Length: 231
Figure 1 (cartoon, rainbow, N blue to C red):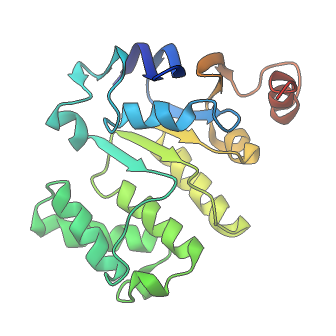
Figure 2 (cartoon, rainbow, N blue to C red):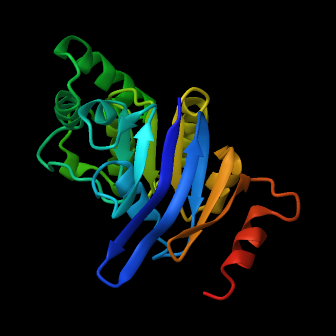
């Protein structure tokens, strides 16, 4: 299992948002860090096939990012995921399962499992507009997992979660990362410290660091601040 980014770039008129990034990701959890405007979300959206790179290629085990088979192995949670407020939690997950092509015979079972996993089983029949911010975020995590993805891309997934929910999420992601590729972008450094096998840092569209979260010199927060002290 391998996600390969080969000299991937994205340019908007005179601004280069992502500048010739090359990466090779295998099973594990990758924590993506960077200041606002560093290019993290643009990079993740290209990995998910939402944005087309200006240059370079993205493939997963030989599958190009634009092909249907690629989308079938992908799970994605954007910073602001779209939902229908009058859907119930269960209805929303069944809808997402249908979009992903899951057979009806297993979609309901999978949705029920995920609602249990994110502690929303008792709220499954309530409309999403009645959910708190943290509950909506947990539902977003569930929809990203609906097709049991081999590649899971998460953009600020713990935003709005309380400390107990965040610990539950960390444990879940650490388990998923043992057999799949997880790319996690967050401003919460403790999330990266607890679960990321590899830390990636972006600055001005470029990848400036890739390595083990224990960099051998100082704690992650001090190391991160050192890289961005000029910003």
